[in-house]
Length: 117
Image (tube, rainbow, N blue to C red; front, side, top):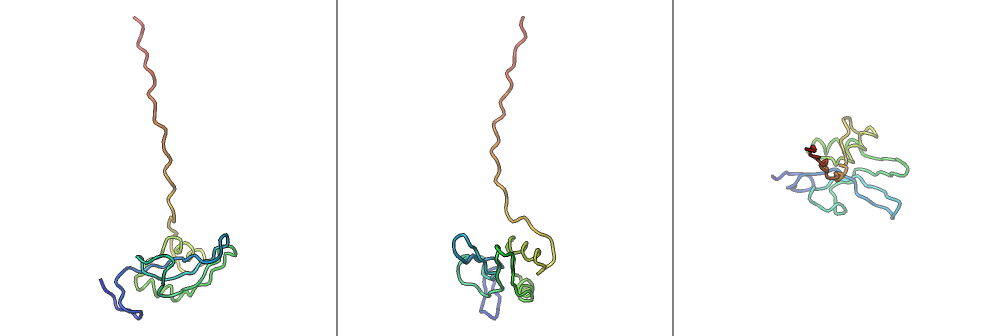
């Protein structure tokens, strides 16, 4: 499926997600729009804002986020939850990660004792 767009022809699904920046131990994130198949640290179509998790500070162009959502861009679960927390969009939060399943111990059969005859 090909879509005509101001950035050219887009042939893949678009995604609004976080792009990690900053030094080790001091993360800083860009909020970007990119194709879902591109590398997370690769080129993006538009920079929508930034998020500093240490200060809990989010600066986002809300009108541009709405624009991309209307154009069919999907949000990553983390970006969706941050937008809801910071009142950029309205809606329900989604589960961003799945806990690992713990290995269950094998159930041992209770020893059966035969009645004495």
